[in-house]
Amino acid sequence: MKEITVQEGITIRDALKKLSQSGEKCLVITDDVKNLLGTLSDGDLRKAILKGYAIGDSINNIYQQKPTILIEGKYSLMDAKKLFTQNKFDLIPVVDGLGKLTNVLYWETVFKNGANNQMEKLDVPVVIMAGGKGSRMEPFTKVLPKPLVPVHEKPVIEHIIERFTDIGCSEFHLTLNYKGRIMRAYFEELQPDYKVEFLEEKEPLGTAGSLRFLVGLFNEPFFVTNCDILIDADYPSLYEFHQKGGYDISLVASAKEYVIPYGTCELNSEGHLAHLKEKPSYEFLVNTGLYVLNPKVLEMIPVNQFYNITHLIEEAKKLGSKVGVFPIDDDAWIDMGQWAEYKKAVERL
Image 1 (cartoon, rainbow, N blue to C red):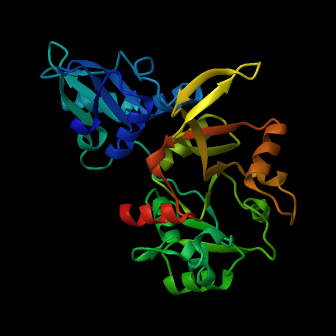
Image 2 (image 1 turned 90 degrees about the vertical axis):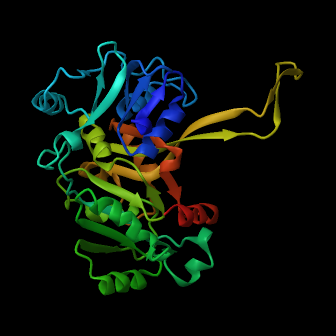
Image 3 (image 1 turned 60 degrees about the horizontal axis):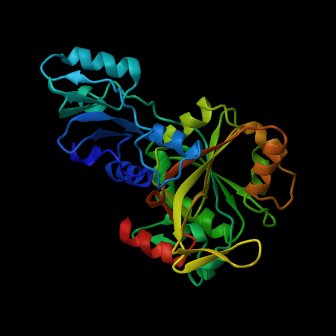
């Protein structure tokens, strides 16, 4: 219980980190003597961030203060299974007669035989944009294409693919340009048990131009990811978020805080000092490079033109398409395209 139990008053940032560390989708809120106060799901956190809450804000106004509970000694296994099945809960707190938390039931432990999974395996296409030069990773990329830069015993692209195969994805499309022959040769030698198709760019087409080649190929939303990022997120929840929200494009954004290590000066209209802020912090949602796209948006991409994903998103918005943002914790994103982050990845994986 300790891994998912937190006290009232922590920040949204702390709650995101706690969920990321625990690998669960829900936290249990208690006071300092373990009286149950409520629950806080990853969905609650996303809704709060998208409504304008800052990641430094307290969770006090966003957690569920009247959660579904079970009373110790007054429920059966069948009662628990019924609640889980009807409501698709990830967990249910158990309290004693005075409301003190005594246990937490998880879906996985209630349905021990594994026959009842909350989320079916996803088998949807994944597109990996693997054609860039990776100039920030030189000198490695003078020899190897960026996706084949090694992280321990295997290249980064295998770490990326594993995150999708773990949820049931088996169809991968790789866009190639720089050192494309080496990429092809690697997968021919690897002989994976998943399907790999290659899209060859004759000239660099940006971060979205080659997606135009996929028009007419997919009948359902699909994942698109950069080849130099590792995202430890709930991919099925991302896909569900995209579908339930009715989005045409969904992007994964990392909640980041930047602190300026100096005192900053704010001037008034006369050019005099109005305020002096010591080491101010600023919070942003940063695009990570992982997306879910509906097939119809591919038709917006011009044929054989350099075109970035940012261009596609802006064009989609102009045409009235709905773009969603799926926030994740800062620690859940590693940008492997930078040396400093690459070194962190080697230490963490």
